Length: 555
Image (cartoon, rainbow, N blue to C red; front, side):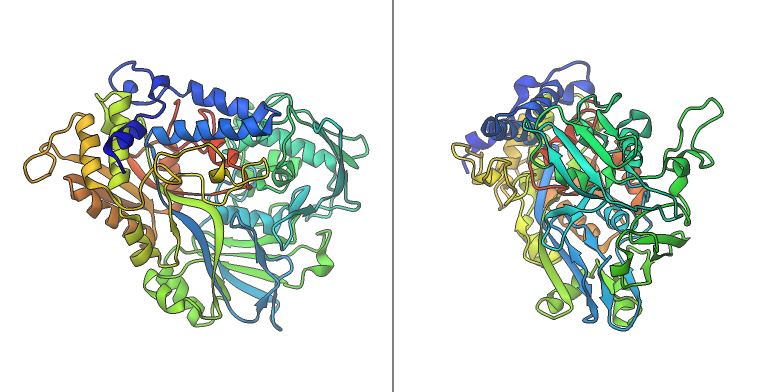
């Protein structure tokens, strides 16, 4: 890879960046990116849309704030008796048709303590799995990963592709036995889009006319149909209708919860209603008990519309992030299904009948806070060069070969390999689009010399030994996990080659999410599994107002 090309890559899109003040000047001006995403969301020219998405990816990767490591595989273990479950390419696992031999209880570990059980507030894969077990949308995913009718039986679409009229399934009930109708979806969608709810995924509603304050969704008077008017055609709209943020929640349950509003009537805790077991839901299972940080027990919901085909009576979740403890419980027969395996066991498990590795559309990456004091006094270009240098120092193949060990593909860009482009092709195969390095923005192999040159561009000097004369010190935060810790340690060793000192901070899952979201970090572990198979899902999450914009772009 030529150095000239690399340096040009490091400075992609800087023409859109501004310099105002010492610390603020190092963060990119994000107005152009926001406008570009809005154009992508509104255009009806799908070929041009692909071009615009490539332009957006160039701007995003030009900041250096996202450091892709590898494209995800999904690994899990299941006892031979466990059958009938399935997973989609986005990591959601479905257990409503699962069986466990003669046993009517399935014992699982998916994650540690969940951050939210309110589907509108959830933004994690483990939360999506729990939401799919206890709530539901107009559509869901079938075993082949295709959107299929759920609380709606179908829809009619207008000739211009803008108006969907969903027909609701007859006899839908909440878990308390009360009627569930299209009016519940009208309330739920408007609630999730409303800024006062502060849903991370509220931006997913921005393709609906009237977003966010006057969302153009309407239930019929009898609650039997649900009409949605889009601002432009959306090829993946059924995927949205199957996504947890679009699930229905019961208004009375939400708004009667203690702590929901303050004395002045302002919403202060929109998820207060789902903080303990016993809340009203609608899916195949309902949460019966919850020993925080320890376990959760879901039981079959007799009011679920397809309850006759739900064979399990209970889902018992062990809450833990300790891979060694989880695996020991599985080996002892105390768990039937696990989503986590210790790194040192993976090599020996590959090829065994209880160990599964399947492809996913997602990227494991590290993320910089563009507003971190680490970049104080640097220009936009210099800060981007610093971050790019870090990306070039990482040995991705070493991480895959020695830590993850399940044959992941090294990631050279944020948008994963194989993602479709929404225009009948694969995004990375778009004709006429040339990435700086092969099919991405970074070489697979580390390039220490090029990293040094970028750091020189950022104002740093090196001694004769090739080490920084003024070392850079940064802190890397990650949630509790032996694998995340090992990856952090590998990155730290890579950065030490040029004199960058990276310390590691381990945090419990919920604390970690809160700190990353608040921008209280320099460098952090991150990962994103696509919510649907279109690049806009990986791009729109970085707009200024997105609840998933942990890099703090435009903030």
